[in-house]
Image (cartoon, rainbow over all chains, first blue to last red; front, side, top):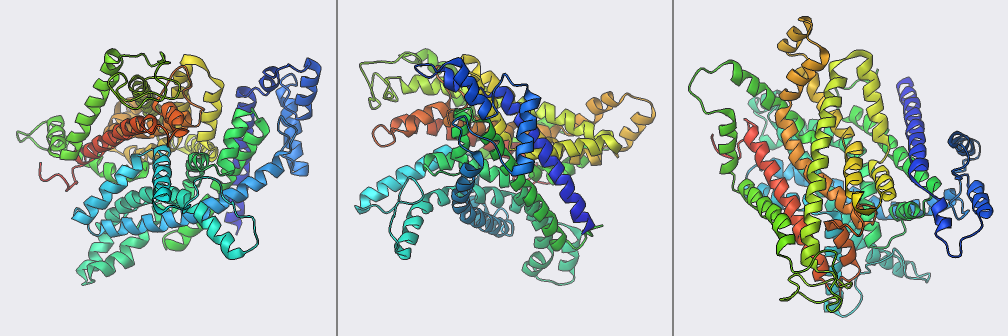
Length: 326
Length: 312
């Protein structure tokens, strides 16, 4: 317990410093004043300054004063600041997180399960045709940029819709049904979700396939597996009981550290499928020079990564008998 | 991704050391051996040929193109591929052939430069952190972990968005390097942990050789094979990041162009003029796939335990 507490304190400190770093970088690189200057007719300077100051993003205020206002707002009121349009960031981000979770949770779980499964399957058949074919397919999908993959899926779906003559898949948004029939509601969600889920699942699965294959191959040649084999244990049992367990440890750590990666991969997917998730929110806030929103998103991403890292620690301790928490 | 090589190349490094101490037999040189094993893999050779063709296209394409990439033909808007415009035109009348040739060159340049720079930075920092043990290592690792908390994609996007004009690709390259080395340095640090216990590293240290000299002379060269493979595969990663950012309108922007930028233009006209999307997609996939094939081939050629290429 003390171990966990210490680690938690360390993580909170890391998150605090990382978020502050992003805050300073964002304040340095983003220029919300230009939003107003490019308006036609241009509003009077005094009113521009007033709006910027109200949102605590006026570049005429010293940066440390802005930082202090920002950080005390979060610590005291959990207030993540205002957009240049004076809209509170906290509320806007919460609804986007909801959409992102709907989109990502299924795909992430599917991707990990399919990927690790494929990795184990191909590792036990190293250099046989199954391994070569599946490995080739995965390598191909690994290098295809997300944008190309997602656009390909969109083209395929549109073609299929035209072929069957009615709208089987929706290529944009997350909901379009407005009624109260939960069955129709569910099928509506499925029609929207299936395409982005395919894209995200493929992206996640191929990485896990290739890494899990390597990890398992490494442990399959380890001494303790050979010993187990020499004692007469059939290959499949030896792999399942001894090699698999060890080879899952690095995968577990990987899962933790790719949470941030899933998040960025979703930026493209959300943009193409026009889903109002965090990724899309991030792009809009960048384009709008919305300092506070960008920092809040970065902080959320960082918090996710750290929670995942903590869970990974616990999971590794559970899988690996050699790890003693001390 | 980078973790895969970890175990493989640690073994490779050990083998190389044993190799250099022992054999007095007449033997094939190491480079010749690697080259021979590399050439034996058909997929790797295909990768090299594909890459060469692409590089030639990026160089020659702009010369033989009938139109400049920044010279729209207002008499041919959204034309399908034909004699005048080989890959067709965009809705704005730009020649897709010229765009793709120019964009491919940009994407290649950004990918290769930032991958090289990332490797150098990661190698120096990763080995340094591992070499000095003690508090340098603890503080260094803590900072690395802290930097990993920040989603680097967001920061890169933030920085390149503020850049504009034709210098944008340089800023993008710098940003990709500035935030791309972190996870990689971690992996190299783990590898160096084993290297720093080697006898000749200890010996050099007791002889009073400067720390930086040891790092440069003994540690970094020992990581050679990992670094080469990572640089090749890093190009794939960098090209993918570049495409993603440009696609979102945050990377390379008009008047300059890159494959991601053309994809973005093609996205809105998927149904009416699919060739705008198809041409850059094909070139992009060919580019990343060829790099991946070369990287895989190199890995198998350098790794002495690999069983995939027959006996060398």
